[in-house]
Image (cartoon, rainbow, N blue to C red):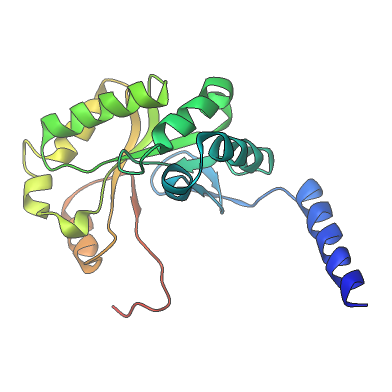
Length: 193
């Protein structure tokens, strides 16, 4: 009986996936409609072979996952995502990050990411982990956000924002003073803010 229950659950799951598309939501201040489930490329870039990660990416897209999140620090992830983008760029929304503080560093990071991803633009670029950075430096006239604004102006990036993995209370202060299109913050039931 136990084996039958397990098989039935797998069958229901497969059937549900084949007929029920992922729900979508508008992302931040963008015009992007994204599924409520995205693909974070860090585990694939750090822990999987290129072939395994590429196969997983294709399968995720086949199942309706259209938001692909990557970053230069995720080892092989940019190259893995780039292999998939060569075939499926028009099907996905690509987000990357710049783990830097200055405008020029942000522009250099974007250019390297575009090269590694094999695309002429990304949909979203975030200043990575604002909570561990000097926010005044990042948002200065020659700070990383200025570099992302320039990348947006020149078409290399469609939308800009920041991620904040720690010190998330800083995000609220930043949002009160700076206009960005989107932010990414962690949700962890174990954290208390």
